[in-house]
Image 1 (cartoon, rainbow, N blue to C red):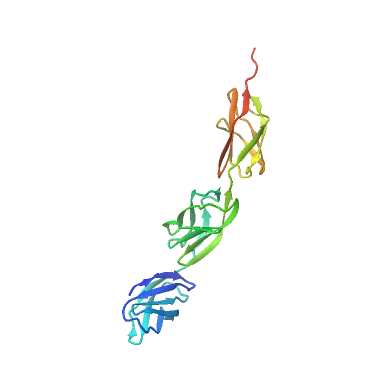
Image 2: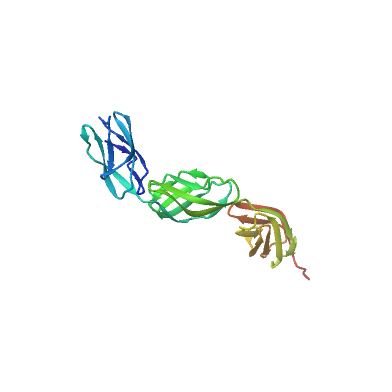
Length: 248
């Protein structure tokens, strides 16, 4: 006599389908001796019931006018606990893979990022791998995990738009580096790298539209200036020109 699903939340409320023979006229379905609710005779071979609250592994039995069946196991599962995300932000377009760490994750069936839910890959009871879905707009959304034990919220993921670079000022400086440069654009608040001709430059985020950087040493001539955030990179081609010092 199989049951499906064979596991559910410790808080109860799981709709269980029992399949067998001679189930017509079922009067009770019990979970470890506790009665299930909403018992429905679907057919002579199938009956459904909603599990009560419980814990551990219990036997499920069906009672009809002909007697009570042998018990089959049902496993109560606690609600999941999420402790962290491997990445807390990413592109609004989604598509990046992150891991969720916690406990009680082995029965996970869905991970919701705001209103969008995706199916995770269960790595272990403490780790899930999930491809982040696209977001409706830039900004934070709640992350929830649903398992056989219920749904747990409490973490946040921030969608970020790609950065854009509009101006670089001043537009030139010595090859020795050390020039303080102001970069303006959009979506710069989460900037995590600024480069001049591929060389990383020290920088400070002023606000969402402004970043201050100091040029590294470079080779004479125009170079590209690139600004990156967790969503992507924008490159201003030839936006800064290194000038060689005079020689005698």
